[in-house]
Length: 43
Image 1: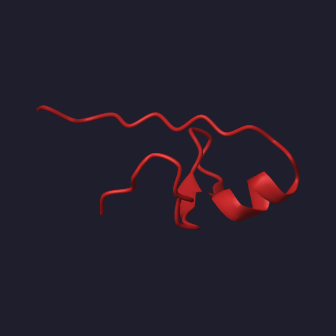
Image 2 (image 1 turned 180 degrees about the vertical axis):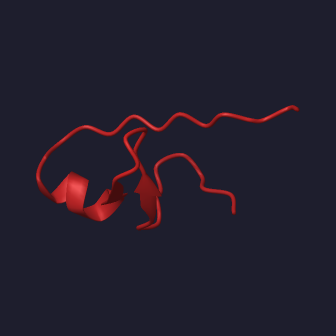
């Protein structure tokens, strides 16, 4: 999926480094900032 600059990201549920599930929409509603880091496994 390609998201163009300025468009809203889809609401997805991701897993934190601690293993906790978190919804992006829920985070944004509370006014928290979000940093997404995508790691690519090359092994």
